[in-house]
Length: 119
Image (tube, rainbow, N blue to C red; front, side):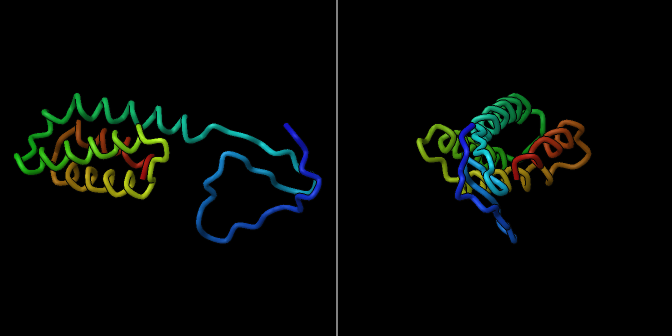
């Protein structure tokens, strides 16, 4: 860790921090955390699980096609040098909405629980 002697702290009011480095407080250490890569791995694992379970959800043909397009969109963003979080989020929301349309499925409930971590 390196010291930033000019750092006087930070106040966040709404919004979010999107940075690999965070420093808080007077003479704070700058902490680098590879959060995006960790979350990317978790999201890729979720998408793999979703692909393996999607046939069991009983989706209509158009829902199935739309869900697969959304999955492909997220996967393409994850491969990008600069993934666009807003596109990933909107695609995941679309997937969530499609899954929510399936009723009484234990598989769907499990997938919905998992997708919440990424939206």
